[in-house]
Image 1 (spheres, each protein chain N blue to C red):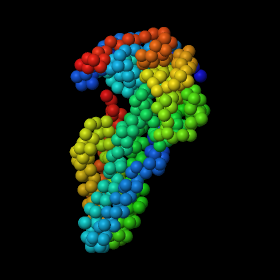
Image 2 (cartoon, one colour):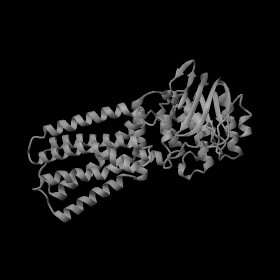
Image 3 (tube, rainbow over the protein chains, first blue to last red):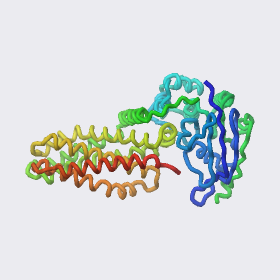
Image 4 (cartoon, rainbow over the protein chains, first blue to last red):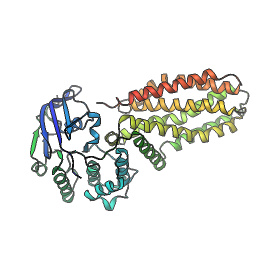
Length: 216
Length: 224
């Protein structure tokens, strides 16, 4: 099943946390299929931009829009169409990997929960550890689980924040396979500074944030 | 096309089942609540003996035990998500209203389980007068709904704030006082064979108001 065409638009989007600038004003417009790389130094607002696009937070100024299949999706409904993997995403440690994904699939209202969970575990190479509690997972395995969570519902837009973090070579190959497979029909937005992850992108947004050296 | 449904009832049911499974595995709140209820009732019965002629004291004691046994756990329903950093997962799979309603249902269930142990124990250990069950269950049921609704609402509001502990006390007090006052009065009047209609009406109105306000507010929670 292929992801529907998605288009993301930003109009002078910026964000502040109190007096600190988290995202400098930014405008963009791109659509799938394809890969967009969001790059910039630490603290330039890559994660903030992804959270805004995913509908998790409102920008201080400006606006974003997401269209899926030509239909505008309001921020509150974006979670249905966005698959987000970010280092901030944690799972229930007392549950197994499979239970965490099954919970996500059932809450999302997926019609075929078990096949979707099995597919996500297979794609991320976690099938053999599906029954282990997340508390026993290494940071690399948790990262794979984040990726599985993001692709679980075959979203129109796959947003990956530092997808290669904590991953070994095999794990990074998993990321590449996921990005290539999804970008064939859908839109993938990758926030990264890894050259290997940037080079697969067809578009690039370079954030001009002030970074850690200039926090204000 | 992402095959996501929008069945809120199913999402609430899934969240409720997740909460139950999590509580069953971690025993985060239930053990502490039952320990408090049993320990405090036992201590009171040792110290004061049977209190069958002090229905005013019995009514206050009953609701104090229930309140303190359950409040900490119920208000932590959201804090656990924040401290475990699982709130983001929740927000990505469900709307704030679905999350909060699932938590509210769990808090109701949690209170019912604690009450299933506490009520018989209370009646036996304190030597309470015979209960008019219809009236008692009406007061207990409405008080339970109000307690669960207020603690869920406050828990949701304070979950992502700094200084949650202090804020919880400050926000909870005005919400809980009307519930406690009406519940204690209704329970006392039930034992004294006085009319309880006014207390029941107040509790019912408060429960409806709290639930309505909650449903209106929940969707606006956690907007950064």
